[in-house]
Image 1 (cartoon, each protein chain N blue to C red):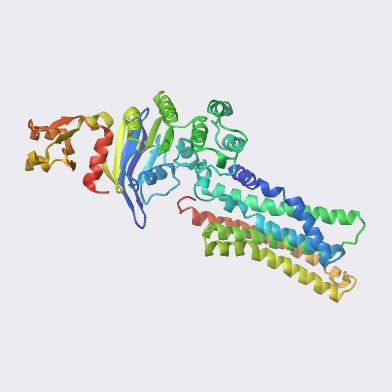
Image 2: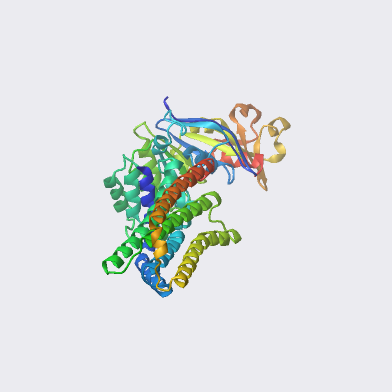
Length: 285
Length: 228
């Protein structure tokens, strides 16, 4: 498989937070879900990839090219959509169009105008007067109207209505369809990842917790439920993020420890959501 | 080329303030003729215009803060090109207002007013000081930002004080000259006009060189920073 994004030992030191040794690869034509609790380092990682934050250590390459080698070509490969509008508030769509035309040789005004028309974005309003959904769609229009290799989405679908979210997920699947482009996607809406992600990278407190193909990840764990009193010590040691309530307990167990379960417990395939939540519970917020 | 595109972006960001420029020029002319007469009133008008330029040229720093500047940071360009674009904006803005002042000088000459050469030379020196003030303000805003609270108050002082000092300095100077020579012109000064002219040109060149140095310092310092 040809790798599109290669991240090696990426680290960033802040006064109150450290992102440490983040390493992963994302092949061409695939979508990676980058997940974790608030403050876990997701946005920092994505900002390091886009280059607007400088790493303390480590290396990022997109399609074999690092920012240090050729900053302009590196940035041309990236399309970024954030959780908030990054356009100057006093701009109108026509200003964005002119700037994109000036800076990106591959920008297609026709394509851009098509998105603006299809999504009913108002040409004559200032961006500060757009709704949140409109701002997100404008960010998508600005990145999809040019030739990018990697889409970096930082909680871009949060706060959008289900129809808009579905439309965006469809767009992302179309984006990677040619097998040449990839998406790295951070979100709190893990059901979105269930639908479209091929890989999951789970980060907590700036450190890697899990990183695997989504299907492998789901195969590698079991969601276990039952009565707390019946848990033998050998099993209790292996359970991850045990949550107890009046009806019993729920936890995650690595699939290779399934023989410890016996017949006293219920188990099923977990969702990504459940794996992440139980891991966060075991590590503490 | 991309530096020019960044300059263009700054003009788009600050497009609304351009609507005020004709009114400011008229105000500058009124202030100039109120303080003095003839050619020397042009010096005051010019210093007032450059005072305004020193304030308005820093406007892009205020329009581009926090999340709002993300789009510009993601554009495929280097820090050097981004900073060069901002300085080109500042220079072109000062030059634009300087050109309008020069046009006023021309209009005076066409109207038959006497225009001693030393006042033109002094006008060049004013322009040089205007460029230098712009460069120093840009250096300050790149290194320290707009800030918040008390720091923002300091930023506003930095934005206003140097230009104001130039304006009052020139008004005082014109006043002194007029007291020495009641007619408002000085034959003695005109005798040195050639030297003044040379000094004016040198001042412009030096101010441009210092602007390049200030821009280079900005590139060096903010190139290591995040979100820059």
